Image (cartoon, rainbow, N blue to C red; front, side, top):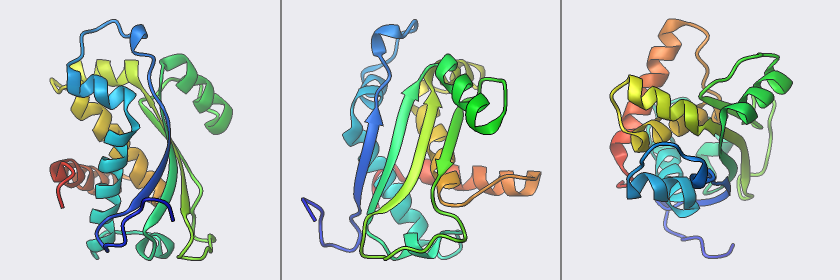
Length: 184
């Protein structure tokens, strides 16, 4: 089981992380944001706390297999507009750029053994789009990247927003996840 903790509030998150090539940035970013764009351990801590929050909050929708597991694997890629446009076109038939894409593995038909590592899927975030949105929303990039990651994670856990009510519910959960700040 590697270095995972046996305590019930600590999750083992295996993250396949693709950092953003920070030399491609055309804006100034602070050291916290730079760290977030390069360092998978920051994301592992955040994602672990987000999953744990969802697991222990019975009001939140979460696949049974996720509720009963303490080991998770997922991918997170910080990329550019061209790559996310290509992915959006190839996989979703959308010929436009977007801020975040999710490729979930678990669905209603998924059955697994809860003592094995649960593969959740992949999240891809366009950093240039996140930069523009952060500017438009008068937010900082650090928050915007984490906001998009929470959105992607909720999709991996089966959340969707086919109507305004479900979108508002999802946005509210994202706010709660960002408020955790890695402290349980």
